[in-house]
Structure formats: C-alpha cells, structure tokens
Image 1 (cartoon, rainbow, N blue to C red):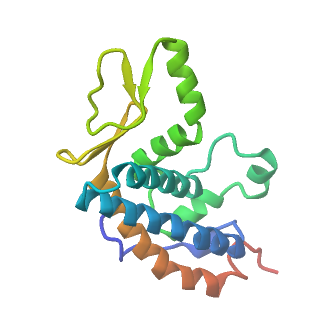
Image 2 (image 1 turned 180 degrees about the vertical axis):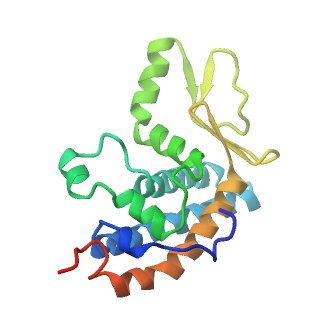
Length: 196
C-alpha cells in the first residue's frame, strides 16, 4: 500500500449491500488492531514471543478471510454476494493481491490440521517443533512456528513473512478502515441497491 490516505472509490459499481460492507468492516477492524498490536509487540521485545506470534498469525489470517474469502466458501453465500470481497477491497483501495503473504497465512492457518496431516503423510517419523527462535530445525524436524528477531521474519508451516512489512501494511489498512467506515455508513442504504 503506497499511501494509506489516498485512494478513490467507485461507489456506483458496487453490488454488495452497504449494510453488509458496514458489518464486515466493523468486524474486520478488531482483527487488524490485534495484528498491529501483537506485531508491534514482537518487533519491540522478546517477551511473550509464542503468544504474540500466535496472535499475529491468527488475527492476520482472520483479516485475510474478510478480504480474500476461501474458494470453498458456501455456494449460497457466493451466489448471494458474489462481489463482496472485491467491493470491500475497492472500498479500502486494496489491490486484489495486496499483500500476497496474507493469502498464504489464511490458507495455512485455516487448514492447519491438513498441513500437519500432509507433513505426517510425507514422513510419519517427523517431529514438529511448535516453537523455535529461528527457522532452522534440527534434522528430522519441521518448524511449525518461529519468529527470528534478527531478520524480522515469521516462519509458519514452511512459509516466511516479513513481520515489519505486514505490520506496516496493517497500519495503513487501519487508517483506511477508519477513514472509510463513516462513508460506508452514510451510503449504506444506497450501496449495492439498484436504483428504482
């Protein structure tokens, strides 16, 4: 996100009801705040690394699900609101793939049980380290979650994410949520409703 205070919205192109966009933004905001707080705490201190890394990944995954819903979303919901993620991203001035790391976090954490099953299928004798201070695992082990303070990288199920970049992106998203929420609230009854 280049400038979190500058973007334009084409309100007339939206098909998702404004009331739904408003509800989604109201529930997305606390997830963004949790990602920022836990991410800042990780960057600032080594205290509570496991809790802050877990909280950051969980809140980032939850936020991503609002912006890039799972392809396996219920058909009835996809049919009722086919453009809800596109409309929400447009309201917030986000590109479709911005940032791509969030989609990977959502996919990995939404299906964490399946990732563990896949690792086990590949190697039934595999040992999974729940927490590590680096991404380097001993032979025969796999790092489930780690935060490396020196590189500011979060490692989760074989994926790597630059924590500082994601925290800064979430800070920009929070600015956009605060600036846009009132506009959506004012337009709620007209967004996504056909003219009569």
